[in-house]
Image (tube, rainbow, N blue to C red; front, side, top):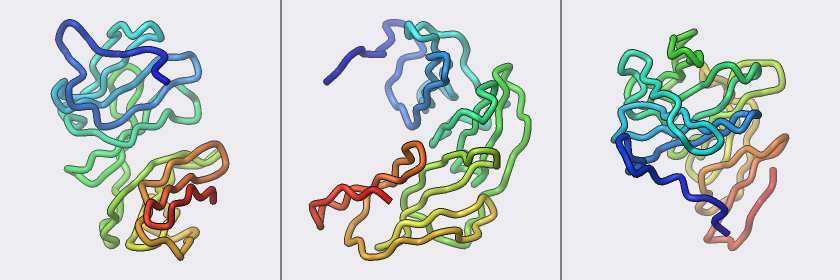
Length: 168
């Protein structure tokens, strides 16, 4: 069911969205390649700002609000890092993502009090890894798992070959 469409009638248009997150106050953040960064929209869908982090977020994906709700984490696949951005478009920190594992699909999420973690698909398994690539948990037995979606304290994975939605 579509409750609201966030298309824009004026530049920047939402033509190539790559990531989405919503803050507790209802603000919407959409990374869009054609806009060259992360669009910050108010709850009504009106443009507040375009966050670019000095051109580092042109192809940002996997957005997640930080624990304080005052900043945003965005995965930068071109530089293989996570950028922690303030609402004022300042880079607070940048954490390298270990590239030792050829991850096919990634979702970034935050722990209760810690740094962001990665939920990744690695072949026929779903894993949770730290930012430096350390394996924290692994679930096997999938045939073709979808990108994991983090929901509160669990992971949701769809495997179309098994015909199942799995909650981990």
